[in-house]
Length: 266
Ligand SMILES: [Zn+2]
Image (tube, rainbow, N blue to C red; front, side, top):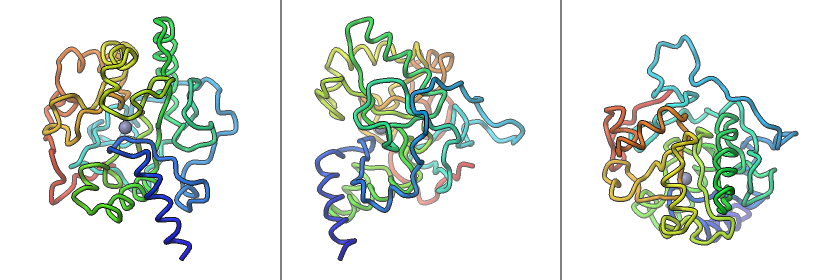
């Protein structure tokens, strides 16, 4: 009974706030899913140090390692359900939710770059806000299952990532919005001053617009001008100037839909 009420609450909330794969995932604070998420950091606004680009010595391709700066997660490549980034912090930027919320966290290296990005935007008179950052496997699972329960699997797959397939689980992805929350998690964000600035300048701070317009057959997702992915300044510059998707840039297989067998990341 309680689970049923919870499910209804979650679904209602999802319908309000979660139109697509990358929408924010604030769950009701009573949600049991939250318990397995990362606890709030005790010093949320401290400036973190960048973490290593990838763990050394594994011999795996960086793109296959969940903790790598250049990990590639998509509909064909799945993260371990147990993977939680080691250095999740609250970036020192404007937040949509309170700093205790798990999805107001990102990886430490991403937080440093995000502050630089926001500060530079502010110098141009543009105020950005973090709408959603880190999302745990269990949170993504609840989000996706909520869609399946309310609208069926076909709709769920078109609107949300299956658990393990969300880039938000890496702590390297973030959904951004104007401080006004105009066009929040909507494609019209790309037409706002903030969205246009972001599209043209994000790479300077190490971010790419991950799901570009007209590339949905390559990325598996519709155009998401709000969803940025941190990959470091050098690589972001190269990818941006190539005009390619991340998968194309690396010469990797692209997935418009979920394949029968996933490639398991480590
Ligand atoms: Zn997103």
